[in-house]
Image 1 (cartoon, rainbow, N blue to C red):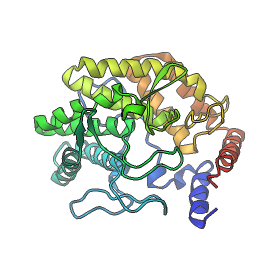
Image 2 (image 1 turned 45 degrees about the vertical axis):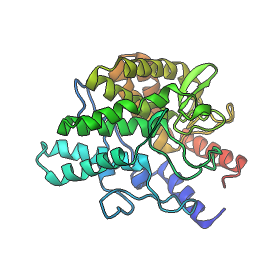
Image 3 (image 1 turned 60 degrees about the horizontal axis):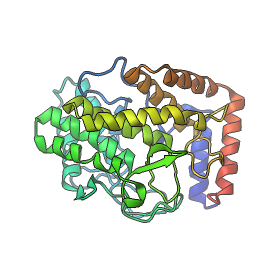
Image 4 (image 1 turned 90 degrees about the vertical axis):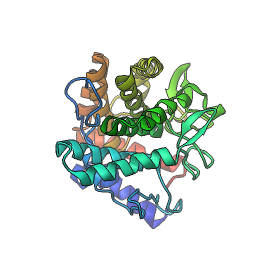
Length: 324
């Protein structure tokens, strides 16, 4: 194991026992709504901490991203979207009076418009590096990125009434209907549809990314009453309800269902993220199953024995896939 990877594992491991030690990438983002919104406003999770970006910005103020020593510095659509959504939360907190937040937010929305790739698969934002963990070659799109980009663009449209933002968001849902093998983000697990954060040759089913994609579909449906976005959202909600039992380890939640039934527990912060995301889905849908899993997983996260067990299994999993 390289020293850099050891430090990364140490940073993630200590958060199980000292949550306040979480860095920018692993901060816990609590549920940010109390009732179903009637229009896009603050993001569904409190992303205000994401407005203080942890790495460099380019000359235009757009986040640059570097992952350990594995990839060169690049643009990361999800990092850009989360930075934008954090800025928008702060803009709302200022009652839309802080021009600095507004300018910075629109810079990110404009980056999404200017750097979209439009083809017969709709509008996508590519990741230009490979994902070795899931064996994905460079230039892949992500349901999570698509969903978060939609959420940013919808808020830019709400802020400016510029239709280009809305049109770009509308075109960004097409990959949800296209199979991964054909360049989209749609896969399935036991014949249950999955919107893939990581569109790999094998099903990955990263839970948090799936749910983030649903937030974007909901935002678009809320904004323009899109029957297409509503249908995709409903299909995703019904799928997640069927899938939750596969993510339940009995003492913790899984991060993904890659190589199922191999057990890959979520890190502490991703487990907490699942708890908060399911709170949001309960508020949006009223389905009590989401609330039940959220409460169960939240209670599990408070027990020391569960934390030790989850961390131990995580290390075992990482060794098994030769990631350590």
